[in-house]
Image (tube, rainbow, N blue to C red):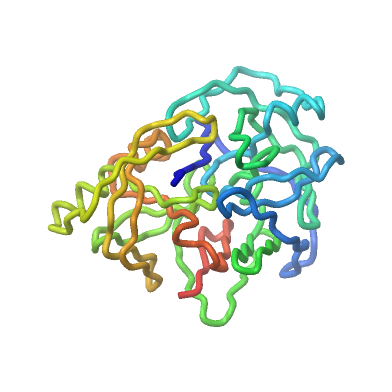
Length: 297
């Protein structure tokens, strides 16, 4: 079974973008998700008035990504300035920002998007990635079961009956970092809609082992990052993973010392990126303005 991730984390601050305005509490709009390879969620995006093109919705990628073919097709210019180090799951590559005048999806236009250009696996079937810099302009209602996404103005509270509000913090690259517990060990968690499998860092494994929660099984697997590079990883079983009152039992997770953990300051403390193996079929609401995630138990 193939284990894949899509990360493109930049060593710079997230840009503040301008968006069209609607009345408070009203949705900009909705659209059906595109079901991508291995069940990843995608949406159709218009770039500079052309398209639409399929993009991966990736809450675990800091910036918008374009494949080289789309950048060339639309003649999107590189922004002035130096090239930047792009941190992926398995290593680093260099890229420049490219300025997108308008990027539109689900009834809303975001202006002045600064995207990076890197190759993505052909198997995913997308022309780009909508990352945290795009998504954080909104409250995002992601219905993975109904295959639907709705975008609301930033700060809009969407709290369906029975949902649990999980309060976290918004880190420097635009990820909502939530408090979690794995085998009763406190950990930092990020919901990663672009990852098929949940990933933990070695520090979390070390802490759970020290608490006599032994690993039931280790098998060697592969982590495939956004640039098709590969890094060896292992899998491990946990009896319980919990986000507040929401919990999963007997979960297998990948173990990888990914550069992304280091880049966002989570390499020296227990951390987990929660992928679609745990979130598939769920409705997840991301309130970036209030650094909160709403989830049904």
